[in-house]
Picture (cartoon, rainbow, N blue to C red):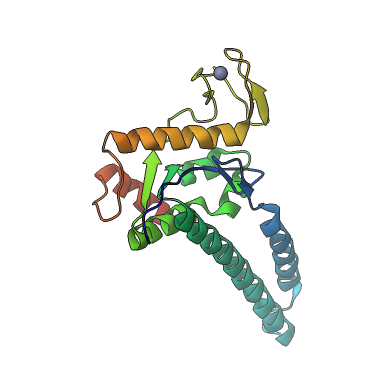
Length: 218
Ligand SMILES: [Zn+2]
């Protein structure tokens, strides 16, 4: 694709799937939650059928079908989103989250799993290679949520339920996720300027390699 002068910061949300530094929020995990309820029902029905019975076979096929549908829906959603992000932006900046750790420890683990962050990053990376775009992953310890995008002030604490906050330093009021996405973009561009970016075609560092492997193991 021809080069364009557009960059975007992408943050993983809990209420919304993905938050862009432009202020746009895309998708909603509840969309996937519906399918999961249907799946749970079908599984319960299956468990009540007698072993070796025809009804059990039928119930098993039904469970398999719902599984496949969920996977299809998520893949489809992610492909549309990543293709669009790649088409519209020359640089895409995101956090390299350790999804596995988050899923184990996070009270909102379910939403994170629904979103498929690892798959989203994977798609962005290979599409960036295809179309000559750059994906920058910033350090997972960067305080993207706690930092005021306007003045750089870093809040000592920011609990998960806070969706909007006002910076005590400059008085600016922030949407938690949009502010984070803006910080992610700024940090990504800074990384690029220093020449440390993970560019398409370049061999990832061993640290990144490790991260990727641990993701695949999930
Ligand atoms: Zn501020």
